[in-house]
Image 1 (cartoon, chains in turn green, purple):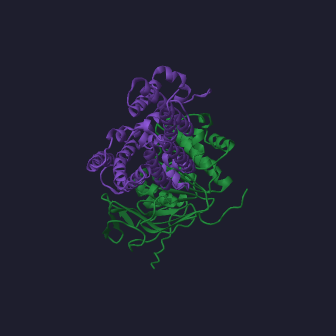
Image 2 (tube, chains in turn cyan, brown; image 1 turned 90 degrees about the vertical axis):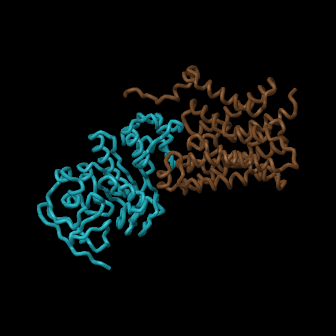
Length: 288
Length: 276
């Protein structure tokens, strides 16, 4: 195996995207390192896909910086993907869309996602779940150093979804790429990730799965579903998202947005706590 | 035997059809039919301009239509009007403007019909030279940007994320398209150029499985349309440009008949592998 590059694959510092008079995301700090699985979670419209596009360099930040390691190969599974009938494109040809790979590499990847039998099918004729599997196969076939998967198991049945997440973990262990995952499937994601970033226009909380699951910000965002996942820890939350999109902070003030530097937040640092500990330390933010 | 002018027409027509095949495919895949129409109509302005300053028609048409094409791209990117209505507006305005400007050049006797519907039987040896050398260059550049352009056609963001620079290749493609149109004007005229680009490509879609095969097939069907159109024009004394388009359309209709479908059904339906 080749030596592993230890430079971060993509680094976002205080990055924000401003569209149609509002910030889609703001104040995003995120690093994806080789060999780790980072998962973005958050409700609809929380900026998960936008953040992923920032990390990929598809969108240029309106604020802050994004640094991408240009030497690396990137594999991308977009959330929205349609192929029109006018495009004569079968699975085999699609596997070679952006990178030249051998027949064997293509077949191996297709076999891993269990769609090798669809090799000669046209893309527009696949079902939603089949297409997701083919997209994943294509994104891993050329062994990229960074893989970004936007809702990879959307439309795939439950057991299939678990198998896909297992596969993603396997790939991480074997080839050590950095993986940025976007997902709604809370239960499964928790088991298949190293670090979780919980988004709602800004980074609400981040840390290991068990820490995030216990965070009240996360629980508020995901409701009962989240509590049933894992509710061991408790801590007080410093702001509330109002229905009209504004934010009420712990000090009682209401602002249009919230991002880490507005002085309304206590930054939350998570450390790997003992599973049965009932508190999480809050350290005051160090402004400056 | 055949007359010289007829041989020249065949050579020029087949050359243009072969060039038009792959370009037509991208126009179909990217839904640029209306865009192509607009550039073609705008090229009438290029013709008027060339006559005014007495410059090389093909070159002037290329410069004018490429400029308009790139301006259109920018306009579509930053305009608040929908692309469809913007193109509809500009396509016909450009045609009208070209006709008005031509009317002002009163000191020249202009055969307007030859600009609108082509004048393939008046093709010169220089024209054939331009078509083959120019066409070779255009196809060469297209082959060079093919991977990136095709990846961007399938999914723009995916291509961009994986380091392909699809917006770059798209702009190059648009300029090449303007060049193809300026070369093809003499064959079918500004009103029918889009037909020569789109009809063979759409017909080819029925018979093939891969994008590269579809491009070759489109070239082949286009060449057959040219040959068929020219011979029927000779036989029934019909205008050559429209005859070519009518033959291309006939091929399209035939390709939709059940017999054509069953001949090639292996490719037009998803394959079902045993054991499913």
